[in-house]
Length: 85
Image (cartoon, rainbow, N blue to C red; front, top):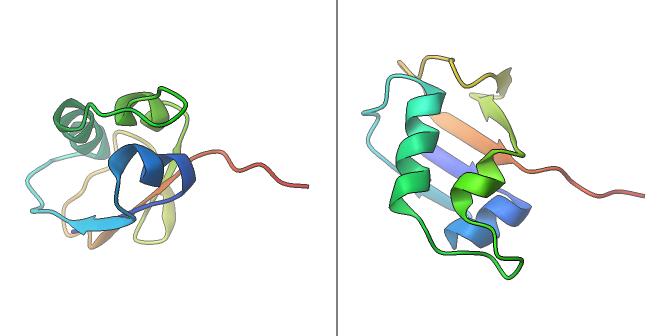
């Protein structure tokens, strides 16, 4: 499955996208695993897990909650809050 990171999530992860094996049952499982594996911080001092707490997520282009199944999923988008004007 492909994971696409945007804005602060990209800064916390250090990449804009990655492909990982689909071994997690739910989005929550994936987020916990990624948060535990990636403990570096952003310039603002946030870890990836802390950024996840503020994000919304899309699974194959549709809004998803943490309990969403990842069975058959090809893409997860990690979308932190965006500033606009």
